[in-house]
Amino acid sequence: MTNFLETISAPDELRGLEVSKLPQIAQELRNFILTSVSGTGGHLSSNLGTVELALALHYVFDTPYDRLVWDVGHQSYAHKILTGRREAMSGLRQFDGISGFPKRSESEYDAFGTAHSSTSISAALGMAVAAKNKNEQRNVVAIIGDGAMSAGMAFEAMNNAGVNKKVPLIVILNDNEMSISPAVGALNRYLVKLISGSMYAATKRGLDKVLSVAPPIREFAKRLEGHTKGMLGPATIFEEFGFDYYGPIDGHNLDVLVSTLQNIKVLAQTEGPQFLHVITKKGKGYALAEADPIAYHGPSPFNPIVGIQAKPASKKTYTQIFGEWLCDMGEADERLMAITPAMREGSGLVEFEKRFPERYFDVGIAEQHAVTFAAGIACEGLKPVVAIYSTFLQRGYDQLIHDVTLQNLPVVFAIDRAGMVGADGATHAGAFDVAFLRCLPNLILMTPANEQECRAMLTTAFKHDGPAAVRYPRGSGIGLETTGQALESLPIGKGLVVRSISEQLPPQKKIAFICFGPLLYNALSVAKEINATVIDMRFVKPLDEELLCDIARTHDALVFVEDSAVKGGAGSACLEVLADQNIQIESLQMGLPDEYVEHGDVNFLLDLYGLSSEKMKQRVTARFL
Ligand SMILES: Cc1ncc(C[n+]2csc(CCOP(=O)(O)OP(=O)(O)O)c2C)c(N)n1
Ligand SMILES: CC(=O)[C@@H](O)[C@H](O)COP(=O)(O)O
Ligand SMILES: [Mg+2]
Image 1 (cartoon, rainbow, N blue to C red):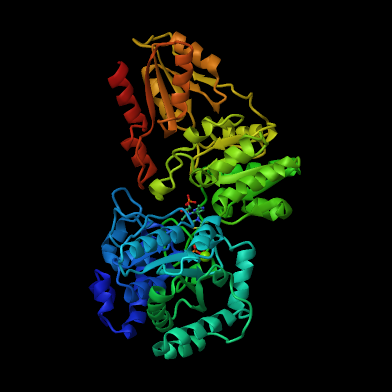
Image 2: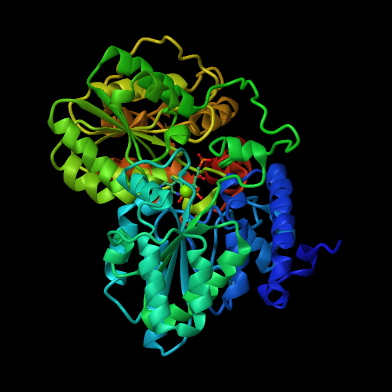
C-alpha cells in the first residue's frame, strides 16, 4: 500500500488528493509521530490527539496564505510534518534542530511563534484585522486547547474579536478535557455540559443561521445535525461573545471535519468570527497514552512497545526537593497554601495534593490570577506558596509588583526551571527572573547552589514576613540528601566562603569567584586548579555587601558566575555595590548572553556560552593570568 505521507512534502500535494485518502494519511502520521517522538522525546499525547485536525486544516485552507496559529504549539508536530519537516523531526528540540513549537523563522507555515499558552486568538485576530485592512481575502485560524482557553488572555481576545463582525477569524477549540493534568475550573465544567448535549441548541441556532445565509450548504447543515442533537436552549458563552458557534463535533472524523471547515471558511468571510468546538482524545491511537495522557504529555525517549519505564534516579531533582519540602512544611504549618497555575506534575505538587487537598489550588493556566490569588490569601494571615516556572512567572509580573511586593505581602515564590531548560528552548528559558526580580523593593531573592540550600532557602522564604523567591533549575543537583532534614532558615542576606586561596602556593593573581546558584560547582573545580577563592552569595537580594566588599578589597580580580542573563543579573548587582563603594577592581561576568538561548542539551549549551568548567578556566586564564 502506498505510503502517502512519504509523497507529501507540502500541503499543496495533500490538497490534490481525494478526501477519502485522508484517513490512511492520518494513520501514517500517527504512526510516524509515535515512532519519532519515542525516539527523540517531546510532546506526545497532545500531538496524537491533533492528527486529524492538522490534516483537515491543511486540506481545507490554502496554507501558508491562510494562516494557522497553534496555541501553545506543543501539539503542532503533525502540522510540521505536513509542511516539509518530516525528516527534520529526527532533530526535534536538539541544538540546530527544529523547535518543539511553531517558529516563524523555521517555516512560512508557522504563522506565529507560540509556546506560552493562550496567545493564539490575539495573534490571529491581529492577522485577520490586518488582512481586512489590506483588502486581502485571507482566512486566519486559531487552534486553542481547552486548557489554554482557561487563561484570561484568551477571553481578552474573544472580547475584542466578537464585536468585530467583519473580521474573518476562525477559532477552533480543541477540547480533550485535559490540560497537562485534568482541566480545571468552571470553564471546564461548562464545556463538559456543552459536550454532554445539554446545550446542543447552539448548534441548532448555528444551523438555522447557515441555512438562512447560505442555502447551497443546506446539506452541510443536515450532515452536521447528524452529529448533534437539535435541542434549543441558552446561547453559548462563545455566541455571547459575538461568534457563530458550531459543535461539538468529532475531532477525529475527517469527513465531518473537512465538510465543516469548508463551510465555516465561507462563513468567516461573510459572517465574521466563527467558533468551532471539536472533541478529541489526548493520546489518540496509542493505548498507553490514551490511558495516561499526563505521563505521555512530554516524555523523554522511550520504547513504544513497552511504554515509559520508571527508572530509579540516582539524584533527586530540584522539583522533587521542592515537593518534599512543601509536604514537610505543609505538615508543620497548616497555614501553608500551595498554588499552581496548571503545572501540578511539572512543579512537583502531586504528593501535596494527595495529602492536603483542601490546601492545594490548581488555578488553571492563569499565572496573573495565581499571583494575586496568593496575595489575597496572604492578606488573611495564611502562607501561600506559588509554585511556578521562571518563564511563566513573566505572565504574572505586574501582579507580583502591584499586588504582592508593593503591599509587602508574605507570598513565597518557588521558581522552578530557572536558567537554561534545554529541549524547550528560548520560549521556556528561565533567563530573566534575576533581572526582573532584583529591582523590586521588599522582595528577597535566593539562589541555592545545591539541594540542601534549596530546602533551607524555601524555609527561609516561608518564615519571612514579606515576599520571597527561591529560584532553582530544571533537573537534579549534586546529590546532597535532604529527606528529614530540619526545616531551618538561613541568615538573610548572608553569603558563604566556600573556598579560600591556599597560601601554600600563592597564585600570581588573587582571583575570587562570586557565585549565585549551581554553577558554583563549575567555578569550584576551576578554583581548585588555579587556587582561587569561591564565594556562595546565596542571596541576590539583599546582597551580602559587607562580604562582597571585603573580598573585593583583598583580591586582584572578581569573576561573577550565574545561570541567568548577565544584563541586569546578579553580577551587575555586585558591580553596582562596588561602584557605590568606589572600589575599583578587574572583573569578569559569566552568565547567559544577551540573546535568546535556543533549544539543545544543557551541558552543550553551558559549554557554548562559556559556562562549563573547561570554558570558565579558559576565560579566566585569558583575561587575568
Ligand atoms: C503561560 C503558560 N503557562 C503554562 C504553560 C504550560 N503548558 C503547556 S501545555 C499546557 C496544557 C495545555 O492544555 P490544552 O491547551 O488543553 O492543550 P492539550 O495539551 O490538551 O492539547 C500547559 C499548562 C504554558 N505553555 N504557558
Ligand atoms: C508545552 C509546555 O509549556 C510544557 O509542557 C513544558 O514543555 C513543560 O516543561 P518541562 O518538561 O520542563 O516540565
Ligand atoms: Mg486540552
